[in-house]
Picture (cartoon, rainbow, N blue to C red):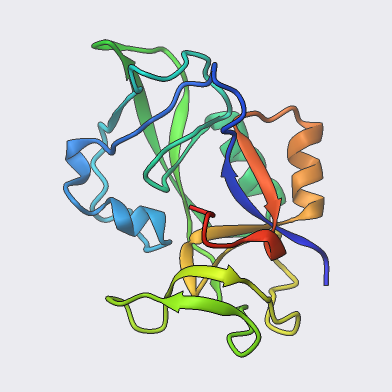
Length: 195
């Protein structure tokens, strides 16, 4: 099995701009975009994300968020659509800092591909108390190599859809392209501290 890594925010660079809350226009439906639900029928056309006042100002290809949403540059969205083998929805968005809308081409990206790939018998986890069949957090994650999709380089774990797994070859493509704002940790290192 090709090694997999979990996609996460670049928390090491304090100069990066962050989004810490979803726009009010998503009206408590943002969880759908964080878990891979098809959302084209309800996402409004004029989404504006406010950049956090207490974070940095540098715009990266991925704007780190505290709400599990993927806000990415148009350049990165095109690269992911072309190279990942996965299905995506993208919605143009605006970024705003201190009431000023920035002239920066970003999209809200919704990764639709979800795969059941966890070896539940060998993993150690806390079940989600509200959603049967989903995991709240892992103490130890073990993937089932027979269930990992071979035709996709990026996908969500069905057992924890907010977690996105990425193959090493796609990570290399993203790094070669100079993409910024994201970080990757080996899947086997996912534990209770992983958000």
